[in-house]
Image 1 (cartoon, helix red, strand yellow):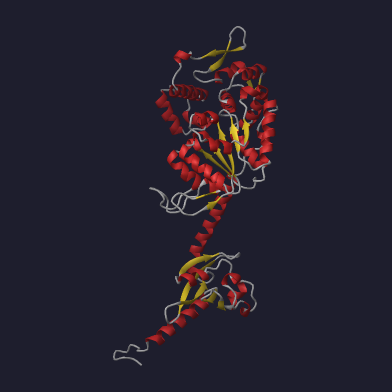
Image 2 (cartoon, one colour; image 1 turned 30 degrees about the horizontal axis):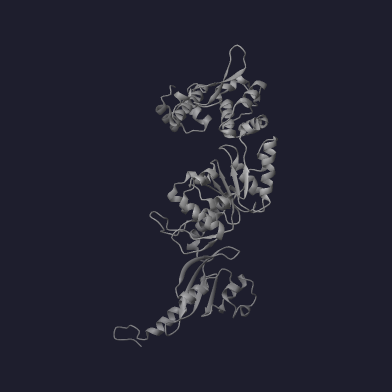
Amino acid sequence: MTDLIGVPVDYSAIVRRAMNSLFKAFENFSEGTLIVDADARIVWISERYAARFGFTDTRQAIGLDCEAVIPNSLMREVVQTGKPILLDVLENGREPLVVTRLPLEDESGKTAGAIGFALFDEMKSLTPLFSHYSRMQEELAAARQSLAQARRAKYTLASFVGTSAASLEVKRQARRAANVDSPVLLLGETGTGKELLAHSIHGTSARASGPLVTVNVAAIPDTLLEVEFFGAAPGAYTGAERRPRVGKFELAHGGTLLLDEIGDMPLPLQGKLLRVLQDQEFEPLGSNRIVRTDVRIVAATSADLAALVAAGRFRADLFYRLNVLTIHAPSLRARRSDIEALAYAILEELLAPGRGGHGRHFELQDDALRLLAAHDWPGNVRELRNTLERAVMLSDTERIDARTLAPFIGAAGLPVPSVAAEAGEPTLRLRAQADEAASYAQAMDDFERRFLGDALRATGGRVAEAAARIGMGRATLYKKIAALGIDI
């Protein structure tokens, strides 16, 4: 029947006809169709869709929970919320499917079930979307693999070069620490290899397959340390991201968390760290979510923690919690017999392919080795490496003797070697007397001025070549030249 202007009066019939046509269209153009009841149990499934999930007869799937037939199905969520999921990607072990899920209501408006359509194969217009999704998935997988590789131990105990009594004792203690799960406290001057020991302990432990996550406490502003440790909920603080931020404790779950320079940790955060170590759980900033954590703590510092405790700058209870297995990394002057082996190990690394060695082979003469052994090395192995790197970069000969090596040892205000003209043997002299000692900033400027000047002289004043040899950007080198007043 129609009214006076020819519009059908039976609107419900038109709606039913439209819904029937729409259902048939989706069924014809989709990879599969599924209908569930109010309990998310399957009441109907197309033959092609059932076959995709291993059912030769659709009747075998009837009455089963949707997740038992289709892994990762979200049909139950649609039934429970009554809200559609108009466009989604379903991972099912084969090629992903683009799916649409709609709630079904009864006459009273109550959700009575849901219907889903898998649209991917025949919906050609969605192919660009799927291609973009696949590319993003591949990039994400590559990024995760790269990140996992970066969070593996980079060093082993073999990387701790030396056969002196002090070195052998440290290795023995590190092996013992690797066999237990208690906290480890690494003490020692800067440049003694505490991070190397932490990596080797993790890599030898039962947690080696888990992540090794490092936090340099001294390098992070106090206001951001809590977020760095425990993460934050979206909008937890001004400037916070819209997505949750995962903290280092959560990232290190199942592995090891290295707290470098823990002596610089502010007192308020020390109490929160102690609580996490005791309870093995925490709440991200601005969140009520409890996160359980299984993390082995390795703490390292060049500070005297006992003195900091006495001064009230480090909590005694946290100190006792960390001071279970303590390893003292010896200074280089305490294991002088290792210097020759260390020096050649560093030279091999510096001259390795891809490091700019260009097939060169450097040899340290006996007087150069005596000179290295005579220096006190306040910067320890890090200073030794810097000295040899400068010598390799700026030396004209591959046979390094004391006279060649002497200009590269020491820094402003520290004892430095010089070569006596008559005897040809190295002696130690002070570059600056105590009453004329420069400030730290001035000393660093003097060091940079000498270092960059040597690099420029070695390349005949060619800035680009000098920058490439020392690993510095050309623009940065130009700025340094102007700021330090270096003549080219």
